[in-house]
Length: 463
Image 1 (cartoon, rainbow, N blue to C red):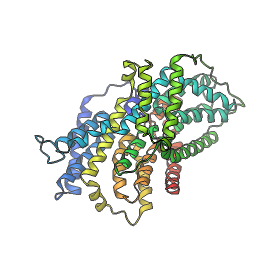
Image 2 (tube, rainbow, N blue to C red):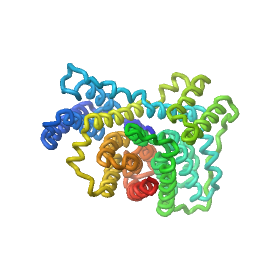
Image 3 (cartoon, rainbow, N blue to C red):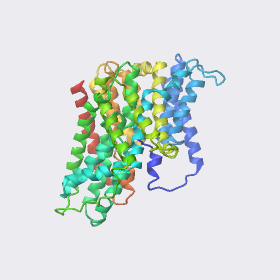
Image 4 (cartoon, rainbow, N blue to C red):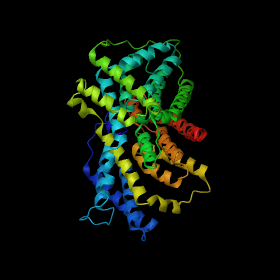
């Protein structure tokens, strides 16, 4: 869920950048956004929409260049919407300023906070490590089945735990296995790329699996659509399984192992009957069960998220130090994407964009184009930021398909793994030194191509 490239790159890059290039990129991004708004679109008769377009473009360029931290762009969006969006004067405040800060306490934020606290509790009690070793050991010792077990476990955990944390944890789980393989054994590459692929694509599985999913659900809620946790899983789980299977087949064909059997990682000792472990296990199980059955009992998923928030803190399993470890930058980034969507809707900017890019005559082609743009953009910038920009625009341009447009863009954002920096899991496995940049491209291209086609097909098959 945490897709900050800065955080991911710290696993293998320790370089202090000069602030001068960052300052230049910052002002260049603002200047380019101004020039495009002023001289290409030229919304002179629509001043508010012009100001909304400026912040949309500025945020896009800043997210791509990372001239400032990606989460800081969210604060810039918020400040701009309060002070400059309404009339362009810094000394006046937008009378509707509450709209642009209400997302901080919105349902999506509490849902993700609950997911993050579950993940932190699982990590602290080593529930995730125990679960991963328990599952992998059930697949046997045949190389193809070991890879399948590693990818299955990685994918399952990535649906409920940060894909960054999952990739780091799984990398530590298979270290003993890697040490038993020769340096030139191609199966090493299969294991590493398998972790990256399943951690990325299985984020599609649940609402909390990836931040773009949350933005999509938030966007649908703004349109009065109640999209439940189970509704998302009906689309996300089949896609996660299918793309993981495609990746597994590809990896076994490209990086076959000569061994008939591989030695599994040694199990670590975990106090399974300890009080913290029991609380996390029960809380995890009950929370996931309630999330998946919310349509039956009627309790909103954001309200259910208070169960792990309360249970893990009042029992002392998570303390103040653990709370500080929660990826707040990801939450802030999600807020920025949601606020940007509010700006696009409230100023009716999307209506002008639709008039510039008419889409009524080619709905399917537009869905394909948006899917490709979402996938390509997510390879170059935060997929959360890409979703925050594209989902409101897609919903406006395809207003007859509010569910389909949100789903396609959000899910296609999870098909980006063409480069080592495309996703944190890619960056993490690249840090081992066993992979070259070019080795990400074939699998990344396959996941993107098959992913976009299967996403559009399944979404329209169901809806």
